[in-house]
Length: 175
Figure: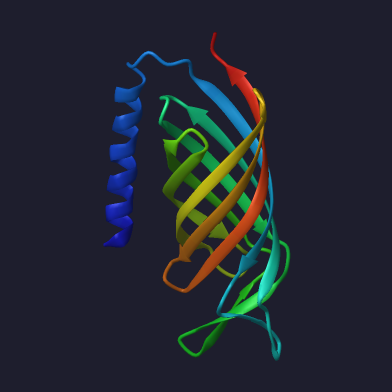
């Protein structure tokens, strides 16, 4: 049921994209690379509980409206770990998460985003829901440094909290 609701929400956001493109705005594309740490509360490796996992991420955002953008986000957790699911151990080998998100830019440098995605791993792929916020510091017209806080629920199997710093660069702007 949750997957259906998320799919409908994402379809609705696509309609918002079409509507918003009619407004007078100069579209732009921004790329980002993120260094982060992820907290996976249920993670362990052998007998040892894993608390923090180093993470790398990347985003490509398309700004179709002054307050809205759509993005493709990807990240990789740089460590193998296991989580317990219904008295079984689910192995996660350096999982890669891909998500399509919709950003709402509440303030000039502060945005919130949500979207569905998938986590890919050797043992099993999991559907995920990503919810996050980003606050950016403008260094120049084309470059920002941003702080990110991301929550992911992975198919109700386990959760991930990620805190990172991103380096954002404007790649293209329609003149």
